[in-house]
Amino acid sequence: MVKEISSFLSSISHTAQRKLSKIAEAHEQHYQDILSFMHASTVLVVGFLLFIIINQE
View (cartoon, one colour):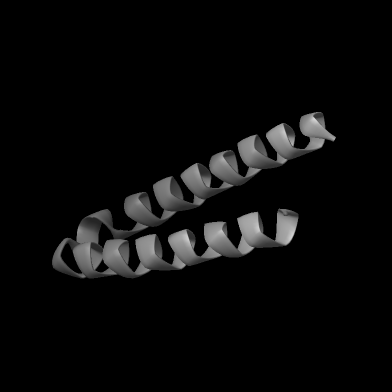
């Protein structure tokens, strides 16, 4: 169960990173802001899902 969720999350994360990288290439000055926002939101989502998984068991 945890492996499926983590692989699902990583695929979503990779897709989002590719799309955001293309956006960032068009807006070089916002590149760092986009990367830091992406990193923070990924950490929040993963932490929230781990919290749910741990509480279910």
